[in-house]
Image 1 (cartoon, chains in turn cyan, purple):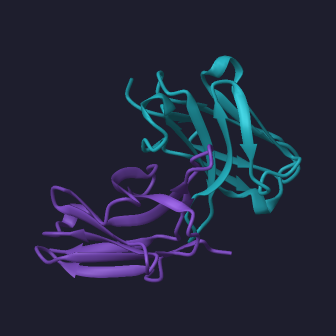
Image 2: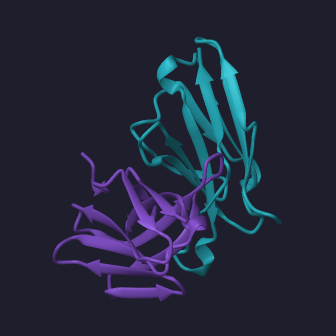
Amino acid sequence: DTGVSQDPRHKITKRGQNVTFRCDPISEHNRLYWYRQTLGQGPEFLTYFQNEAQLEKSRLLSDRFSAERPKGSFSTLEIQRTEQGDSAMYLCASTNSGRGPYNEQFFGPGTRLTVL
Amino acid sequence: DQQVKQNSPSLSVQEGRISILNCDYTNSMFDYFLWYKKYPAEGPTFLISISSIKDKNEDGRFTVFLNKSAKHLSLHIVPSQPGDSAVYFCAASEDSGTYKYIFGTGTRLKVLA
């Protein structure tokens, strides 16, 4: 396995449209995290999964955002009725909690969303 | 409320010299700290970490120092190389079960040849 992959790498959409991003973590990793990064800022936590269970969501994750991780493998992040303020880099990270809680998270290359 | 702060947006260093990147935090519950490096169009890459029970951790050219009383950590790169030019993010985590990272805003390091 070569690492965390994300698809698409870039997405341009019009305001009001729905978009969906996919993240494929490193195969043996049971924890998966979504972060959002805007210009000039560091990544900000959105939500995380332990296997298929979504265990925490940030207040940044409005009702228009939904994330899933069916079968504890890949994850999807959907944004409904996109707004210009949703324009950002969406990063996915994974780690294996079985090796201890403080293993580093491995990040994917991100999906850059531009809402026109 | 910015819990992790990197007050220097950019830093330029001559090749072969030491680069020192700084990070301050406000949450005393943080007990694990990491540095990530990010190149354009790539995701952050893990560099080095330190637990709050230590005050120093070394890995090759990279050393992280932690001063818990001052709530301050720093990353030293010696000697600096042009390939080190990137954005460096400091991140912190606490033993809350989530182990999510709280990132600083990053410092852009430029190593001049």
